[in-house]
Length: 168
Image (tube, rainbow, N blue to C red; front, side, top):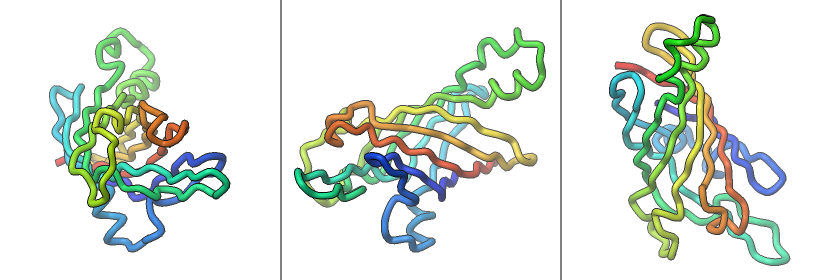
């Protein structure tokens, strides 16, 4: 999966891209996920999405993505309605529910800057929809946020991502 477009919830604004460095190679290499699909219900794998928080000091504007925490994530995605989809008769509803998933991201590979935030505190959880475009190409729309708002001074720092999935 490749998620080149990301909108992050930062205070009262929405920020495009993860960094000020919009170099195409950097954006592509830091937004790739590789996973394995198990029984059409569970996807697990590794993602290069960085875990970052804002630097917020009293009396100043926050520095969005000012502190790098972790460089990689393990992830698990579970297709939420895979159990009940056989009972649904409407084909359109069945297709939509078949593509909905919940996800959890566990970070690893601590960044170069020393910090006291644990992997447990930086766990992200979210949900998404995956739409089939052609045979092995899917469009992926997902939202995730930190479970613990304390690491980002009370803000959960949600991220809406749009990407494409290639099935091999």
